[in-house]
Image (cartoon, rainbow, N blue to C red; front, side, top):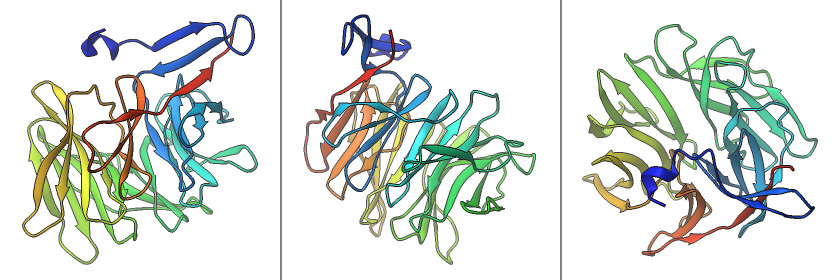
Length: 288
């Protein structure tokens, strides 16, 4: 099946039969995002819900998110919570799921559209993109315990898809304004630096754990490819991966060498210095 056709299928590889007669098991999907916990567990969004997959692949166990339309899950650093986006009620809002208790709660009152959440490494706050000031999407941060929020950026246009470096000192995000996209780096106590600019979309930045480079998705010649910007002096931008139907989700780093991402309906893993990727298989029982 051509890649251009695959992306429009709501569910791929529905297999009759499974653990019980008449069950439907999904082994592929579309527009999946993935994140990896410190112990190697994976979380994906699939058919409007979240599921956890063991390290190395296997049964995708559903999580009790409480609402449909869950997407963009991100593990907390201790692996005990997941922040995610919910869009079932209309405007996107954020929720936090406690893995131990199986309960979820809102991060905010749902008045404003909030999206693309990411944890600060210290685990007490979440950064996200929101239209809370009524103009465009800016970057905001909220305290997990009190849900009190404060604005971090206020530029013309939209700022979205933020990601903190592993030490919590530096921030990268996407800025869209007047038909142009920019990948922006904001270091502590320094003026923001534009790492890349394009008239084509830029999406899904992610830090390598050692802080040496940032991966991001670039739209080139009608397809998405994974670029990396090496934070050397001078900065160097190179193509890291191409030729796959990449989903618009940040690269998840299990460690400084192992990447996890989604493409072609699958969850894949690849070593940073390798040429080929491997599939991390999953099976999700989605009912009868």
